[in-house]
Image 1 (cartoon, rainbow, N blue to C red):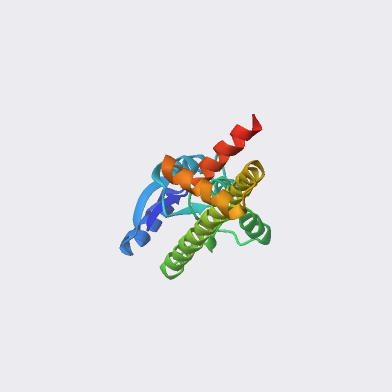
Image 2: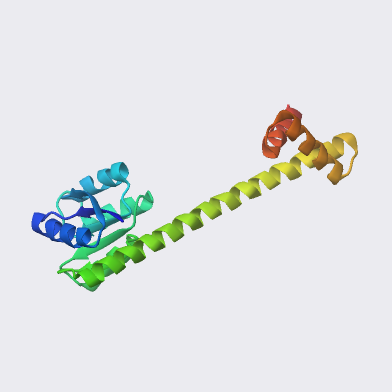
Length: 188
């Protein structure tokens, strides 16, 4: 995996880098605060972000919220604190994992792998939802356009759809585009 490490303490970043690289993961960048983390996420597109909670300028929870909102990468938060309110804020920010320092190698790698897996699953689900919404919109266009042709030429639904399909092939355009054109032309 390609990992972005974000912590305001250079020694911790160095230790995390050593652990990750010893497991054949690539550290694509290091940041010292949440603002840098967001910018680096956009530029580097890491597979996962390992980020401290307490940092200057923008803390890890708010940075994780922004990274998650933009679907840039899964964030695993690191902290020296296990306070319940902090855990609740982290959960609400949409992080994919939460580890207490000092981080052990046997916890770190599986947590990052789980975070990456969940992130990819959610990305696939968002894409499927977008595809379904597009399909539904196209279905509505087709129904409206076939209805227009049925009324205009007093033909069956099958015949109206067939005419749209044939025109789509002749014009080398999608059925949805032909339907939009037909709807626009009859609206005038």
